[in-house]
Image 1 (tube, rainbow, N blue to C red):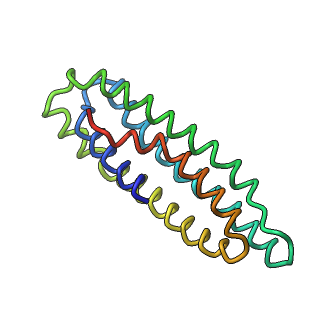
Image 2 (image 1 turned 120 degrees about the vertical axis):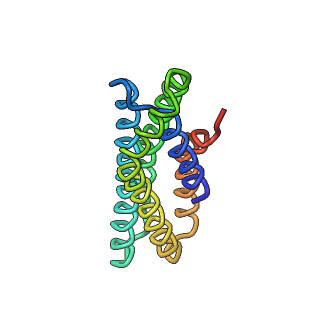
Image 3 (image 1 turned 30 degrees about the vertical axis):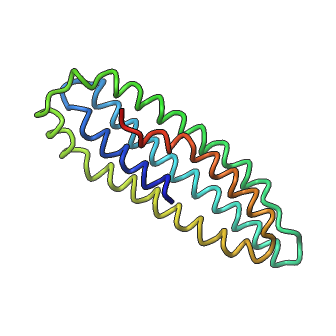
Length: 162
């Protein structure tokens, strides 16, 4: 959760850097919003796979989180894509006026906040389902948590403002 909150810092960072003057600037923030939506979807996919494993465990089978662990790979890839976007934003930082920053931030604030809220909500849902899964096999859940932490790594570096 702390990593995703730090990611919120990156969101604010994006709003302060990207102006509305050119297509490139607008595309960068639009791409950021899209990647955040994708990250929320990937977290939701991990949760869905844990839900499926719980259903099977309730039927008497062993809790198998292999599919959920595999799903963490896509989350990590999305984080790496966001890192590349941050780098491109940094390159354009000096070309954007304060006035353009304010205008574009106001225009995109709602979409950016909604994408970030969806990501946080899905992360909280995943946290809850992991607690339930622990009642069936703490060791398997610990392995998944480790993979989730690894997948969230790229998001952590996004929050570091240079």
